[in-house]
Length: 86
Image 1 (cartoon, rainbow, N blue to C red):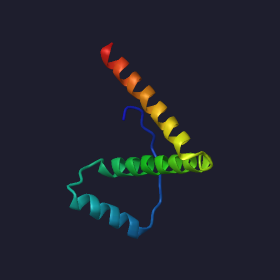
Image 2 (tube, helix red, strand yellow; image 1 turned 45 degrees about the vertical axis):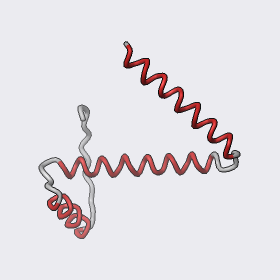
Image 3 (cartoon, rainbow, N blue to C red; image 1 turned 60 degrees about the horizontal axis):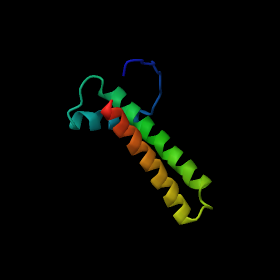
Image 4 (tube, one colour; image 1 turned 135 degrees about the horizontal axis):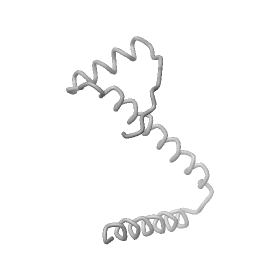
């Protein structure tokens, strides 16, 4: 986290207690609340993105979806290994 943005958020007292208790029970340290929130936001954005993609592709045949997935994975692998060999 090099570039940081400061947020001011409001949550219910119950949510505050629940999150802080959870972090304390799991060995939370200073800064862990920010990390917890960032992780939760990233997770929710990813979940929403996946949902949008699933809706957009709902009418595609399963074999066509699988072919698109395979193609994307192949491209990702090729790029990953190309970057490693440089």
